Image 1 (tube, one colour):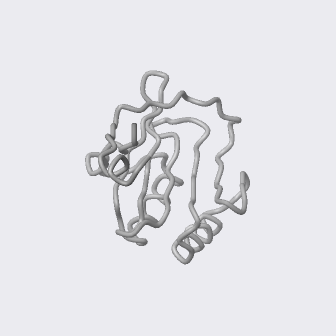
Image 2: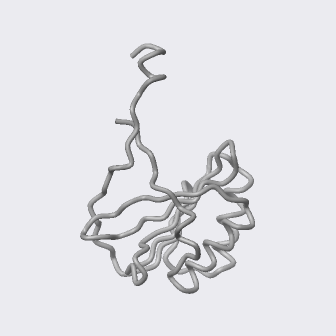
Image 3: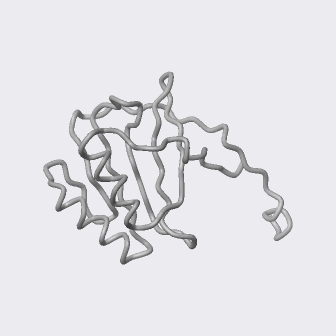
Length: 131
């Protein structure tokens, strides 16, 4: 594809993923590691590594989406930290996102780790994908 073809690509938010069976453990992961037995200190260390390295990501997955959210993931982008939530609905998972600061990202992950919930879901918008 040429430059202009890429420039005018269409995007969509109408993307759903199949729900994946989970092994029943809470999982914390990044490019370098995958932990199933960890503490809030480990979670902070993973997030600090992501805040310091723009090539890092962090994903925290719960064994059950008690409040409809299966996982939270984040990475750095030009505008700050992009936080995405995997929202389970009707046997599918939809991705929503919002931009935030490192401090807010830490708060989101800690709340999700402690309670399985994320505050202010209305602030998140569907992730756009190229068609």
